[in-house]
Length: 425
Image (tube, rainbow, N blue to C red):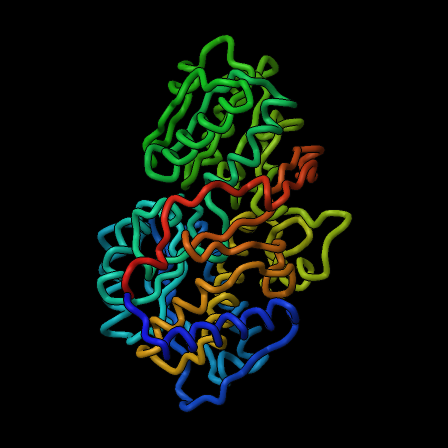
């Protein structure tokens, strides 16, 4: 898009405003609202389908974030109205939901999508409609350049950065011959491809790549395909059958298991004290955000837990067996705060300002750890529309996850694969 001199001045003003906000994290910059109408944010949620457990906690987290933001004055003096639609964790339905947000609901922006195949099915329509689409997905599809300028992932890191940061720990502490088990769709393929490359850089190799259909309900037959010389079993599973997967893994290996490194996706929303999971004691997990409140818990994490209604064990305060998706749901909270910051920097008043909003968020860089970013500090890359942040490795000890390693943001960085800012708005 060719920019006039006036638009360049406007962009410089946005950059200056964001710089001031970064320097003073507690500062809230309000623009005099020209309307008392609420900011309508479309929430595309997996209420049903294989993503339902995540969707339930994404919903609780998003509502809590909206409550906190509105109590502090909303966005530019206007309250947020969350408008929710279930996409069924289905790509075709996801695109239909995006269309509905734009036409029937007249949403200002859309956010919330998690499962990568739904993001890939929905984002093109958002781009066609010029509807800002904020995903909370972890897939590399945004930063890879396959989507569009109206699609951003500013509140959660992606798989490529995660596995790049994890691979040195796996190679140095667990082993270098790795068998991988992953779901057979884009998210799992990201793990397969990027971890294979990352472990190779550490002198290791992937000796087996076992893809499992997302609707599978029995897994023992897949474990039989793991080579005998495997030193590390790397697992990342999602969906309603994750508990069965982990239990069958324990039954298959027993005491003769290899070292095990999993992404907590395999046990999100699952109580570690569930009978049959005892064999996990001593194994390691990646966590996007530590489920259990650690000894050095920050005030920001404490505030976030209390606002969402999560106890120190990562379960609902009203039901200890209702375990949260704590490694992922913070992304909804943080994304909503990014939307707020971007709208305030852009002086957003309505759909005519959507392009200004995209440019304002592209101008963001470092994000300080705060109530808005309780998972930790982040660095947003405006060219790739992807955020980068700390990663966590925890070990199961006595039925709890104990943090063993926290990566730096620098550990997660990789060269840009796209510059969305060169694409027209």
